[in-house]
Length: 233
Length: 233
DNA sequence: GCGGCGCTTCGGGGCGGGGCGAAAGGACGG
DNA sequence: CCGTCCTTTCGCCCCGCCCCGAAGCGCCGC
Image 1 (cartoon, rainbow over the protein chains, first blue to last red):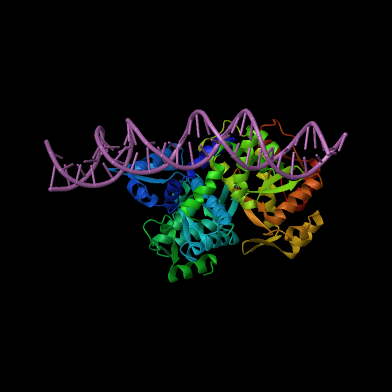
Image 2: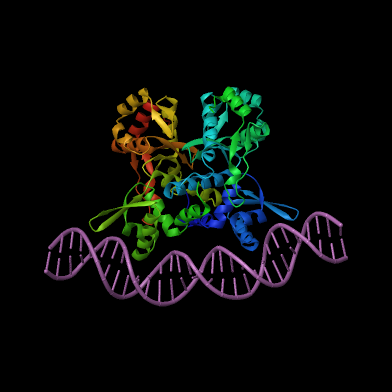
């Protein structure tokens, strides 16, 4: 926790509709250009540039220049967790008539770079129930059985270890239970996408910053995840 | 998750230093009067009144008039969770030189109405490791062993059941692991305070909104919690 | 019932910040 | 090497809101 001034400064970065729209769009884990984010936010390019500069300055967004494009990503999973939690609070305070994109948004979605929704919570529960993860300072460590099992699934464990945190919890606002984040969360999601166990669902509207996050579980994925981790459909 | 406009409106309520100071003070779980909150925020009574009206209007704070005083509390544990998470992000983005109030703040503190810090995380881990809690939709349920064990500790289970959620996780930003919230979290904290297993530590400065949240574990408390739940000192 | 206290409402000043249009960097492609 | 495209910087206007001082309202205690 920090001083009220630092707290308020960080909150202020989230407190403008255009910035909120940009951050919600970046919660899909994709790296988007300034122009795409301007369209998502519904503002002109100059205003978007100013907002993005502020988000980068504040440490919420990282930028990767590539040619004449500048790709923007969320700076860390802490940022994603804060956006998710605050989104849950906003939904509790001012409930939308229907969940955006229907029930699917709660079933399976991306939270920055890892899996969330009922799928993400079930994965986390399955991993711990099978004894593949053990509590460790600052998060979770993989047991011997976990290393073997995850490798058999096709998860890139060396890549997962390169992350700042190997595995930690991230609160799922729709399920109110933790799901798995950290390097292992990222590689697990990458593995599921690579093997087409889960797929990105097409966005409905261009202007909707949440559209890019929806996921669907394929029949193959449902079967494999049930076999390996007891994840129910 | 909600529209960017609703998200930003909620974030804006947190985005002013006076309101942030008030909310951080209310995170102690105490109900404070408008005048006390004005002093905490370092502003005059008129400005404080305006801010509080806005927080109440936004659903973040609840007010209980009593005579000529108006006591304010956080409206729900969702609000507390969002403030905690956002505080963790602010700390990650702009790290304070030292943790406020030293190491004690991470060891044990109140998060609205339940226990947080290493103590809170250890309690949650102990409860699940002993099989006293089982996953349930929207949080946790108590097993038969859990009901017996908690009652033996002196936890008021009927009171815990009156809450909207019996037991659910709340992310601990300093430990990056979940601790127990919901009605059971509240009654567990109340039990520990009532039996003097943990005590409120005196605040250092009047103006510091975080001072009221620090807790200390008594020798008696350390012994009982270690016996019952394996909580290490 | 009357003064005192806590809190809120009202009016006015000031500042920060968002938005756009126009113009200026860079980078790619022909 | 020059047009085109993406992005940023600059200048300007304006809206919103934060703050304080003064005044109004309600509750308590004498």
